[in-house]
Every structure is written in structure tokens, then in C-alpha cells.
Image 1 (cartoon, rainbow, N blue to C red):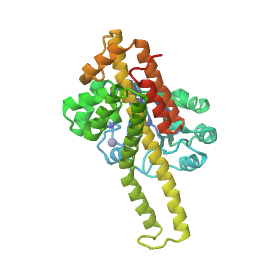
Image 2: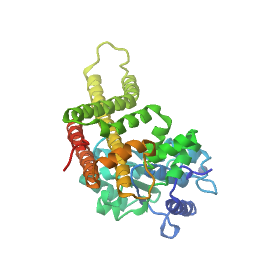
Image 3: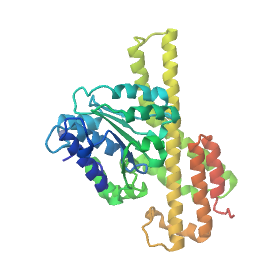
Length: 392
Ligand SMILES: [Zn+2]
């Protein structure tokens, strides 16, 4: 067992990070240059490749006091992996941007020596969300790191991070993990049936989080199946608008289900901390706090809805990708092999150019939703473009 067990399909990255952790364990501070260790790392990889998993594993290895460095079994390893280690801070955000107010406390924290562990490790999971102000503040902190502080920044690609920050970090790139590795992880970690694990890994395009969800959540599998029926169902503009409405509604419901329990817990915790539980009328100060919380929760729900919609669009994209594979006679595996009949029918009913145009339309809709266009508008426009009868 080791902290690297869940960092799947990334032998090169694991080797480099493991070597750095071993080098770090051998030093007592001071000059890190000869050890392979450094104070700022940038871990990049496509969504679902396991950036934050790799960062957490590295943070745990840095704290592990045992000779094997990253045993995965000691108290330090386990608390670092679970997010409970006092010297490992995981920063995630529900906001579109990491703002100055989000980064300022981290910079202060970075100045403090680790309380128990060997290093103070700060993991920023969405370093691509830094804006110019917060990025510049972070840059100053990275430029003059205290001897025992390590920054781990995660982003989809190096280009997503301010160039000044990027140049101060050592870069480790992750690849899309092989489907077989993702399937094996689902079997090992979640006891999923091997056939379902293989299907989920393939359908999710090796995105570990999505694959896990498809594997363990029957509702997610049903939703995906329904979404993949859409391309054949939208035969008219009316049907397209109807389908768009359904897709957005389903996404909204799923996001609500995913966030509502957490919302209620947070609200109860806030009222408890303000001593305002069970009161009929709340004092204005409590009401203001509550309003702030509810605004944040609403923002989180919106982001969750957009994420679910995006997943649905990636699912539909995989269907057209398969249609294109058939049309071009390419010798690669189909993502949606179980829908072979549908795929053959669609492939025969229009040209490869038409398939590409539809794939482009999905890309455009995803961009528009990411850029805060009202989801229903973007999805309606997309569905109209996807109609089977639609030609250039
Ligand atoms: Zn350990």
C-alpha cells in the first residue's frame, strides 16, 4: 500500500513526485536544489485525470515520517489524504474566480511554520481561476517561500495559469489515464462489478470522477441513456426546444439533489454557531449572515447545474464521435458500443461533414455555458442544430 495507489495511469508523474518527496525527507531545510524538491509545483492534466488526487498524494508523502516515504498507512499519510492534516490545506472554490480575499489568508498561512508535520503544504485545486490581482499576490508569496512551505497548484494546462506564476513552478503533467486502469480502480476501491466498471470507464472517457459516478449510481446511468436518445428524438424545432427544456430541468434536479443535503447541514451549523437555533424571529445580524450563506449556496447550485449539463453534452459528443468513427471506418473502439444500431443508423443518414458540424455545435454550446450564457438558451440553440434532418 502507498499514497500513490489512487494516482492511476501516471507512472512518470508518480516517479518524479515520489523522488522529490524522498529528497525532501532527506533534508532538514535550507537549500533544496540538490534534493529534487522545490517550493512550488504546478500539476496539470485534463479534467478527471486526477490532478487533485496526485497533489494530495504528494502532500501526504511529504508529511510521512516512515522510511518508505508515503506509506499510506501511518497517521500522517491518512490524515493528509483525507484532508484532516493540520499542515495540509486544500483550497477549492465554488466561484468562477479565486479572488484577492480568497488568496490573502493563504499567503498569511504560508508564512507560518508547520505545526506538526514536516512541511506546510497548500494545495490550490483551481489555480486556473486566479485573476490578475489574486495571481499577483500569490506570485509574491511563491517568490519568497519560507523554508518549510510548499505550494501545489493544479490546473488543466500550464497555459491556464499566469505565465509569471508558471515560470516559478516545477511542472508535472498528467495524461488521460488508460480505460483499463480506471476500470481496475473502480473494482478495487468501490467493489464495482468488472463489466460495469469497464463500461463506466469507457463511457466517461477515462474521467475518474465521472466513471465512479456512472459505476455506483444507477440514476446517472439512466440519465446518460436518456441523454443519448436525444439525437434521434429531435426531429423538429418543437421537439428540439422540448428536449432542451428537459435536459436543463434534469440537470437542475440532479444538481439540487447533490447540493441540498449539504446546504441544510451548513445552514444548521451556521445557526448553531450564532446561537440562533430554533428561534422564531431572527435578529438582523443573523439574517444577514444567513443571506450571505444562501447566496453562496445558490451560486454553488448554479455551478453544479452547469457541470451536470456539461457532462450531458460530453455524453452526446461521445455519440457523434462514434458516428464519425463508423463513417470514416476508423479502427478504434466505440465509446457507446451498446448503441451500435443507433450509431449505424445515424452514420448512414448524413455525411461526416454533418457529424463534424454537430460536434462543433456542441463545443460552442459548452463554451457559451461556461461563459455564463443562460443554459436554456444555449441548449435550445444546440438542439436545433442537432436535428437529424438538419443540413448545412
Ligand atoms: Zn506514511
